[in-house]
Image 1 (cartoon, rainbow, N blue to C red):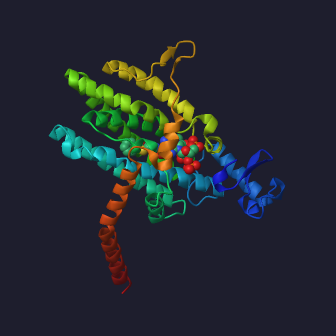
Image 2 (cartoon, protein in one colour; image 1 turned 60 degrees about the vertical axis):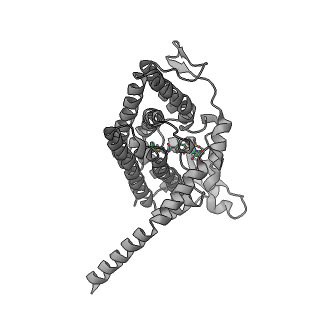
Length: 346
Ligand code: BYC
């Protein structure tokens, strides 16, 4: 079921983790599961079903731990790489006020990355290891940050659409079954909602501005609309992790459910701006009470995930350069801590 970390077999109403048995030739049988594991798994699932939070020292299935490390670290990397497209405009923001707001926003994203790396560390992996995975190109980060920001309106579109999509996806994560992730998400969501408003405010000002400014806003919407829909991940039929993540209450909604909510929320906002969503098939389905939208180009999404988006190389290059440039700071901090430890021990 979950190719990344072994196989799950249905057994007595519970999924059993059988990695060890698979390692011995793939002849795993659920019946061979150790009885204490079955009891632990049942107890774990009962706690999740009862909406209890799972904390770092609690017993958890290894696959739950690995799923969380994967998702939280991808999320942390997204926040850090996500600083780059907007950071690109800090020196060129049109006013001092816009510049100070943008600096604060980009700094917030760095803070989100820091909380999320800390949450991932509670699962038994170090931040240094996670960052190595990112820099080596072995870890994913959100597809959305591989697109360029050629105009100031792109900064508005990122705040409005990208942070808007992030909120839609992340509010349910405040109720994630894993305590440290859920608690980190509460603060992150509060900040993201400011970010979304600042983006919408930029778009509103441009939409009410000169014809050239309105055109700039429309072009940014055209660029960011479809990649924002892709942020929610592959369609449910292709999402390999959703079923277990929903069962474990890491995810509360599927990718398609959240994507639909986002479209329903955002289309009226675009109307208010007087901008047109770049989807000729978009229409309101009164019977269903939701919008119908055109097909997403999943080949573009897969291409970006494989490292061939417009800015993948540039983004990783910038992170590698920043990591090298910061090496002396890490070394100095470690030397200082070692000196303090030695003094305390003397
Ligand atoms: N981009 O089975 P699925 C922000 C991968 S930062 C890249 O549906 P899952 C912000 C997925 O990882 C926002 N990869 O997976 C920052 C999996 O690959 P692996 C970031 C994607 O985990 C700065 C495979 O496709 N938000 O807000 O159940 C400035 C199959 O997918 C993407 C988060 O990280 C994608 N878009 O669901 C402004 C939220 N989508 O690992 C704003 C937390 C899917 O098997 N994450 N993949 O190799 C989640 O909620 C879930 O991980 C996802 C995917 C909904 C993204």
